[in-house]
Every structure is written in C-alpha cells, then in structure tokens.
Length: 281
Image (cartoon, rainbow, N blue to C red):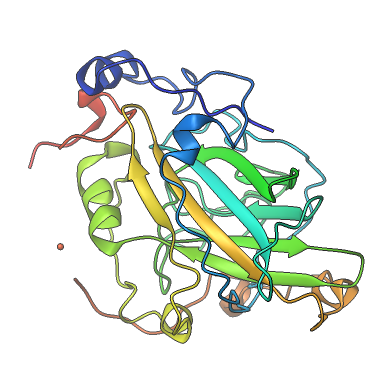
C-alpha cells in the first residue's frame, strides 16, 4: 500500500520545484492509505450502496498491481483513496481487489486506437493510468495518479472495478467537481486543447444516472497534490458475475472513437504544478 506522506513544502515552493518534471516525480515512494494525512479527510462511512455503472469501451486488465499508475506522464498530482465496505453493515471488506483506469491529461486512454479530438491517435500497447490494488484490513486501497483529462461526450471521471470474490464485482465511476475540473483545464498547460470541453456533470447521462451521488468523490487540496476519497458500498449478496464483467470490452463507436453522448457548458494555485505550467488568466 502507498504511504501518503504529509507534505512539508509550501504551495509556492512546491509549484516552483515541480516546474516541468513529471507530475509525481517528487512524491515519496512507499506509502500507506491509512496515514494520518489521509485519515484527516476521511468522510464518515455512509453505508450507501454504490451504483453500478457501465464498464465502457476502454477496460482491460493490465495485470499490474501497483500504486503509481502514471508511468511518468505529466499532470496535476492526484491521490486516490477507496474504502470498500459492506453496504448492509458498514464493515470493511479486506482483500477486495480494486482496478482503476482513466485518461491521462490529454484525454487519451492507454491501449486503444481511434482516440483524440481527431480520432486518429493510437495508444495500443500502453498501460498508463491503469492499476490494481488489494484492500487492507480497513478496506482501503490507494493509488497515485494525475487528475484525469476530458474527452468528447463525457464529464471528468475515473473508472473502477471492485472484485470481492471470484463471482462478485462492482463496476463504477468516480466523478469530480465541475468547477475544479474547469479551473485546472483552463490554467494548467498540460491539459490545453484546441477544442472546447462539451460535457459536464449536469449534462452527462451517466453522471446524472448516479442519483445518490455515490460516485462523487470527496476531494481535498494539499500543498503538492489533491486527495480524492470515495467510500464504496458493496452488496455481496447481489452478485454480478465477474467473468461476465471481464468479457472483452466493446469497440469504441465510430471506427474506434470515444463515446459521444449529450453536449452543453458550465465555472489559486494548483497543487504540485509549477507556475510555468499554469496559464495566466
């Protein structure tokens, strides 16, 4: 498990230090998700059942048990903390497997062709922003990554799967505050795009389907990273066959392009990013 060490640098010093280095190069190697800095922002367990969400076209098992998923790709440092619990009793589920996958800063997933604003980028063979961890005795897992970029037709999100045994799996998506996403995209050059973002939490069909907001993370700002926490309420008596969920993902629609559902639009200093990488205005 990663050890989330308490940051000692001031925000100004951190931003200067990280100028153009890979986003997570300065973060310590070992780490535990139950470190004091993580506990300080832990939300009270709600024991609410986390809603299932579609797997989408970009899942594959990278077979990489790791905490750092970045492979040195740049972006705003983000640490993910999941707490896996039995929804009916609020008891932690030790040993649960958690897979995560999401886009890097430019909105591309690893391992697929037909991506990007022109649907012409091929990342076949890549494994960035994918990883697997197993829950500790407190039901916790942690990952080090970067804040995900956006792509056409979807709001900002991170995919996850929770395998509690060989036959039970929860597939879901973590969502982020629109205002924070919009600020980062507008002010951190790594996220710069010629095309305007077209989909937000308020007009993304999958985000709107999460009526309990069980997939919306609790996110806090530290000096050199953001920490996003999500409590996952799992019902192990309502099994979804893991083998069925692991079947090969469907090809992206439109000759390999990403999803293209609905459209429309919304509203300092960024932890861990040098001023030279942030835009003025």
